[in-house]
Amino acid sequence: MIVYDLVKKNRSYRRFDENSPVGPEVLEELVDLARLSASAANLQPLKYILSCEPKKNRLIFSHLGWAAYLKDWPGPAEGQRPSAYIVILGDTSVSKTFGCDHGIAAQSILLGAVERGLGGCMIASIQRSRMRDALNIPARFEILLVVAIGRPMEEVVIEDLEPGGSVEYWRDDRGTHHVPKRGLGDIILPL
Image (spheres, rainbow, N blue to C red):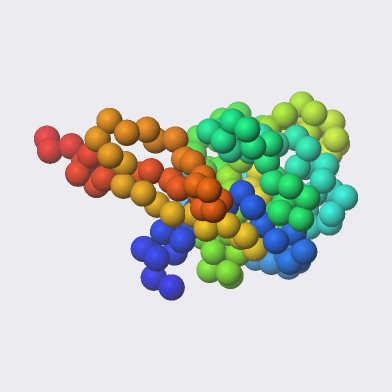
């Protein structure tokens, strides 16, 4: 798959086939992509918690917020939840700030997932203190992001953002997820 197609197919999926497992070896391969990615000053301060066990997945799921623009949607129902999670942590014993390292790592993980026929969602809406307690995460680790991984069960369509239109994503009557994107001419400044 060429990079352009990989990026276009890498959407924020929020409904998955929960019965399609993602094994620990796949999660390790995805984290290896993150490990090989760029890191500010090459400090490599990120650490990861992997989960592909139903009990631990339920625990992580209970501390996440899903799709803020879909006001009446509480998140994926049982059977449509991710099969796995990667919790991205910043190790404050290595660095006190993490810049964009976790965004780079998460994007590498998601692109690797898409290449394997999977999909995911980068989640920053996290009940951090509750998740820390539930997973017994030591205080020196800052919870930065959670990446949900699984086999997508929804179609996500990129739409052209109309002038003056809303950037809010939405679902139609068939459940197709629509994501408005600004045009290239709207984001490149002619200076």
